[in-house]
Image (cartoon, rainbow over all chains, first blue to last red; front, side):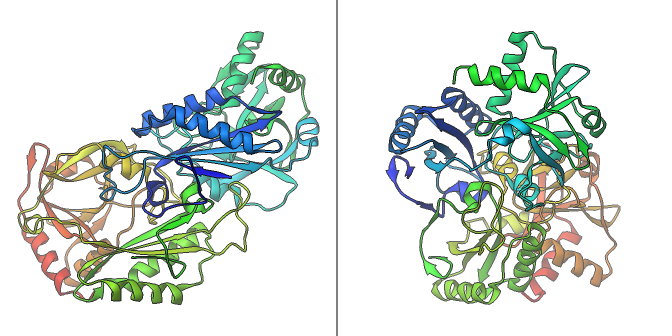
Length: 271
Length: 271
């Protein structure tokens, strides 16, 4: 089921700026056991993104109603995707300031990942495609996703569950669909996302959990050498939770105690 | 009139990757005096973009027929916009390799720019928004256009006709909708587009024209200081042709002889 501005539709105007320019944002929410997980956090990130892109989006209550409607329609667990675009039309790149944002809410089956991914870990690769560097667009979940598309389509081997993406300085920033954490010298570390990358909801929650628990934590640039030396590595997002990394190309990693601790704390954390 | 895969439509599937990820390309073609100008060059750039993004687009003959149909339907001069997306669906960023590209061809009125723009020149500003830096995406006219949207929406004063965009090194790369040329020390210079920017059709034509005419020409990084010192400056694209820049913020420039020469040669050049 898809709702476009509250109406059941499966199509959108060609003139919509989401198609014309990728002029919008999205959120991917896990719906499990009758709960749209981290809904408030997803909506807050969406509103932050709208503020950053100066998108006039004032229909949060309508959006919440539509999410409820989509969830109520789901017979099983699933994924809720929200797209907010700046709206339809405008003269080229210049948007009409009175333009009303387009709301798209859709439901999808949960991807069929093996339960082993979270337990035994996943095999991961390094992507060739380099992330775009942009201070003003970093962090938010906007619709300009060619970087991720090109990186994710570098491999089709289903034994490889994720690809790690670098910036132009060779630092590792994130996975194609996930954030990255590592344990090095017993410290939990995740890449800085000031110039590229999406600031994930689970990433933010894990930072809070780690700090509340008293784990040593740092946000900083992560080099390939850091990755080679890591004691533990994992990727995370709203749908997969935490997947330990058991190998990157020829290097193997254990599913370590801090990763397992965070999996347990995340599972217990309110959604 | 809009044709989607050859059918008159004004909407597109929500599942189309053009909307979901900006996973596609576009072209904007001037239709004047019964001619879709530089059509072959636009199609060649589109095919180059498809190759760079690894989009399976093999329906060039169908696309040409659709462009002809759209042109035949136009009572007057106008603009033809082509969008090619990777297609509809896929599992997240991963695309089905058998996916068929979506073709969208639409016609629009020519923008109502004053004829004075080409004669007396235009007032231009510097944009605050910095262009994303990406070696693999530079040059092609892909659908990830948030940089241009944010830059173009920095001003609404209709007396300012274009904004110049910088990269993270402070070099000027292009306008929000145009390429930039300058004359400095009697040499024609245009910015290198290796890390950002769109390699425009008129830009390419002007380079050929200038070299054929024997003008000294260089493609290189252009700094703010170069801009300050320029003897002549102009912006160009397929729809506007060449607009001399008569001022950038507080600095004025003459409509110079090389700009006028190139306007004349471009007008005479086969379309």
